[in-house]
Image 1 (cartoon, rainbow, N blue to C red):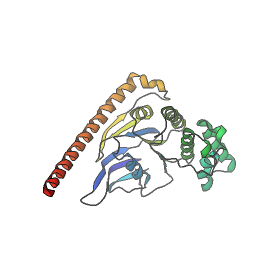
Image 2 (image 1 turned 90 degrees about the vertical axis):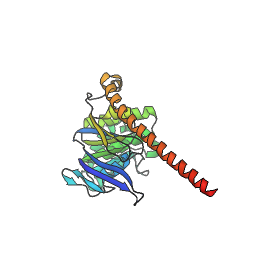
Image 3 (image 1 turned 180 degrees about the horizontal axis):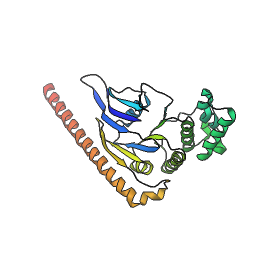
Image 4 (image 1 turned 135 degrees about the vertical axis):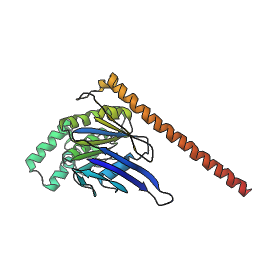
Length: 276
């Protein structure tokens, strides 16, 4: 998947807000690409453009050399919010896509579904409903529901946000287990630097708005990965380098906010003087 000079704005003149500006990068096949950037910089907007939910003002998104013109089965998104059907069992939720498209016979579909559920520790919960699962179990079910559809590109929009620290760590482990068992084209968006470095083969660091690509880092950490790698010299070096860039962007945002606040304050004082 290739992103070329993408620009995305919202609003009308003179209140146009530039969210993405001249964004270009490649999501490599059989690599786990992670995007990180300051809060509110436009990471979710980027996902919407890649998924085809939003059209860029200029630039293009290509999958296998063909331009993205809207949503399609070649790209699947796992969102921050749960999207399981509450009236269906775990098994029915996971197997729903291939069943509707009639891509597999019943025996093959059952075998594939149960194989994936076993990979994420949900084999014993195949007949349970979403309300009977924990938050982490629901997220695992959503991961394999996306994976069973065999998309060309998996787009992950902060899927573990809101989980407690222990559950989030387990989800990272399950996600890596799935990726390493079935490597494909993956883009994972996160706001957490530890998660980003732990998961990534390639790390894309975004700037504040208008959002551009500040740096692309190749993360050369051995796979399969275990949490003990978080204390390695290599991991800490990557983390330090990424933090320097993110800190720089945070300080720009802080100073920009101070300037806006000062302008607003002076305008308010000027207006108050006129009123009196």
